[in-house]
Image (cartoon, rainbow, N blue to C red; front, side, top):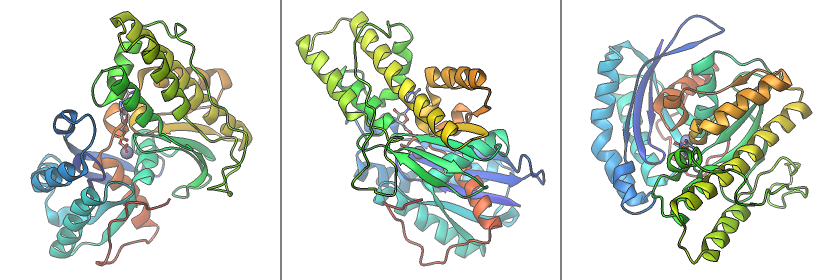
Length: 348
Ligand code: KG4
Ligand code: ZN
């Protein structure tokens, strides 16, 4: 069966065709994965402007879907269902994908499957690597989320912890802005960090020990917090009257990246030990980070636990991961009705 996936939760318009392989160990293969990025539009404003994002999704969605079908060498008749990101995300952006998917499913007489964006990121690991050894700890780390999940059985995601304030990707974007490096910050800081001294600037690591009053079901000690780190960078920049040399900027980037990556990996492996995980995966936009990719593999090798990452193309937002998560849900017997609505605060 072939699934058309549609993703418009933030600033990428994406459509993909993913097919089942018949191999239970590696269940899905990507036939096409088209992403129209809006980065150039939002860069001018230093971040995503929701109104501009939804308007651009409307302009791009038809062409992006046509190209996904063309490259995937599929017609509407070859498809078994349509999967779409229902949330979380920007409501105006989500609505474009949800409306398009509903109309397409109705017109082509196909079932509709609603997908949680983070389920998509988690399943990007399976799309890339095949089924993970379970139980698995999966860290989803993106512009909007930093959350640890325990996966005991395929398709069931148990939230263990999350960030109390900024997401790691958001911290990258905000720190890049402070340093005058433009948007999005992740890739720029990643590149600059390679040239800096990662011990040059003393920055704090935050370790939470108390329970989260807003989420009493979570233990708390696996939670993340990145706002203090961002403030420390701000103080450092102000301490230099805002005038940093290129090599000082590279040092801040490297030091910041060291703290973020160490925190993320420490917490994922802490959770791995606590839940006797047989594998650890990291997904989401920040999983494209070069230092995080290297350190995850090194730590996994040292601890003798297999680690998994998506390819770079499957790390940042894309519809192939939504189609994959949609196939999982569809095979579990879950479809959506035609009154499906976008839900910007959808919980997994
Ligand atoms: O998953 P994603 O594409 O969108 C969301 O669902 O948020 O993640 C985007 C985030 C941005 O904050 C971006 O700065 C970050 O991922 N990012 C990176 C890298 N590439 C993208 N962060 C660190 N290093 C990178 N190489
Ligand atoms: Zn994402």
